[in-house]
Image (cartoon, rainbow, N blue to C red):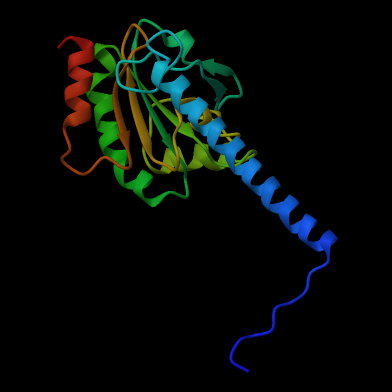
Length: 195
């Protein structure tokens, strides 16, 4: 036989197949519309609504400190803040810690606040504290096991670093680890501090 036999489908089977196809298309259209609306809103957000783009106002963000206290970015308004999202299990995060610690030591007396935002799992505060002690991290660590930082700052993966100036405006953003010898963050800190 040269041609394969066509399978005969009942009208009910054809309708089910068509319905599924129609449902799938409708779902794809809805997802596309949602993504498009998110894109449009983020592009038109401007400075007032918490855009994570350079020059946008940093989103509202709060977390828990290692001591269990509630901490927030809003409480630091008027200061130059570096927010570094990281995790104890992240090798590139470990690699950049000496640079972040050095920047903290160099600029803390001039008004810089360095914050490490740990995305380690809930209940790992003691592990994070031990890790920070072992690696000589003397700047504040905020615990964010629910990954609110990632949701609000639109990040995927760690490490990610933001510099927020005294007005709450994002002046620097780095996705991935700072390379050894990279001076872009130090330059942005100096510019934000006015030194």
